[in-house]
Figure 1 (cartoon, rainbow, N blue to C red):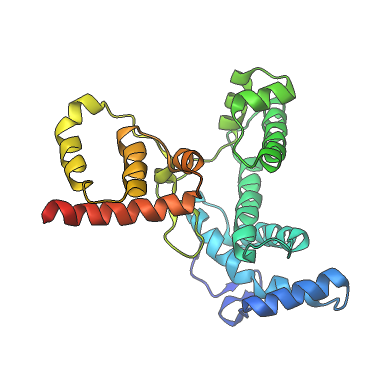
Figure 2 (figure 1 turned 90 degrees about the vertical axis):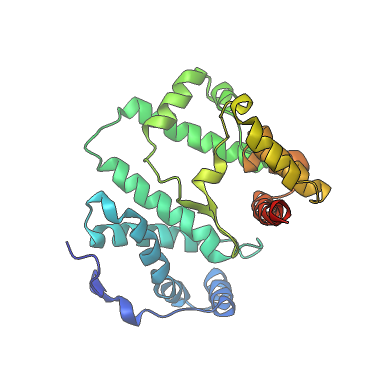
Length: 260
């Protein structure tokens, strides 16, 4: 199929409007107050480029781009209907995960490798419990916590969630607040046998000498203790995005320290 065509589902993508942030907030206020019945349609049309940017991630799935675009539009409309202006979050930050989720649900339902209904039911219930626990505790719940709520063995929870997951690239961005993106790779712990890499550690420690205490702490936890950015963020009380920025800046500075 043609991936680079201008027209998708009868929509000329070259003529799609782009809404500024203030315009969007005004339309959301009008839609939510019922002041302008056409505001929702304007918000949909003004964010179709967001759907186009998302479906590019799924170009290698062998699906018709028109089908993915339509499914992505469903996710867009759901995000518009549920967006809370009171939260200090960009609409795109809120909408992209919902659009991706809608497309992934579509791909799962149309996947030739079928997952049993009972297993899917457990997985979807687990996802619902996960969302609820995250809103209550402001952290990612463990599989054990989810299994206690559902009264389902921990192993079944893990197996069910794994069964409905799509494979993703290690370099797929999972978060971006306008700065450097955080990739799947950043979420992985370092499981290397550190005893075999003591020379590299000596070089790292030498390069860390002139870093400040927080930078040293982050690099120590990330590369000497093998913790994920999320784990480091929780331990030192800052966001994962901040950990990512500090880590990159510290590594850049450390390289300069080693060379000098």
